[in-house]
Length: 207
Picture 1 (tube, rainbow, N blue to C red):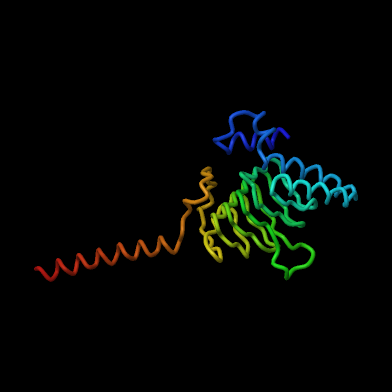
Picture 2 (cartoon, rainbow, N blue to C red):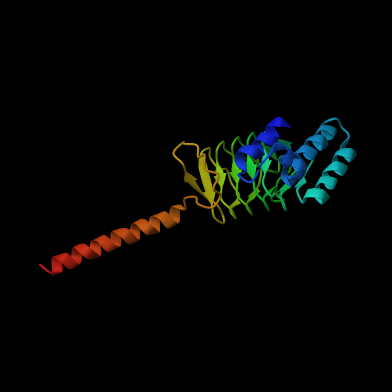
């Protein structure tokens, strides 16, 4: 409980007190309720576990299968519309925004849902679909659709998602919008170079 509350206090600038988080934050409440449901699931009381998870869904708008594994310090911000599938594993200190789906594609059996490493950020509206791993410190941009593995310290952008390396440096910035787009960066670089060449050509013509 302490690590879950501290996660909200550290990552949400709108959070003023721990009491406010405990009583009023739907994302925090959803995580706490899931931990109870997960306990019942692991003790072979699956009907009770499923009942608790469905109550959690109706109360918070966040659907987490009771079998899903959440690490410590997981922060679901805003939370409405979040869906986390049965075989999902979420590491420590991850941040998940609203309308995120950690789901399957319908093609796999057994392990069907993604595994998130530690310190992963999943931006609002992102879909992570399939039984692959998202590495530690990775970031998934808002609205991205991720269908394959994301390396550690990388950012996934777009539909379908493309990977941008972050040179092995963990980003402390939780900004889910201003992430590098490699295609846009390449276009900007080419445009700049074209303008430089046009200037050089004009200078040669005027000599």
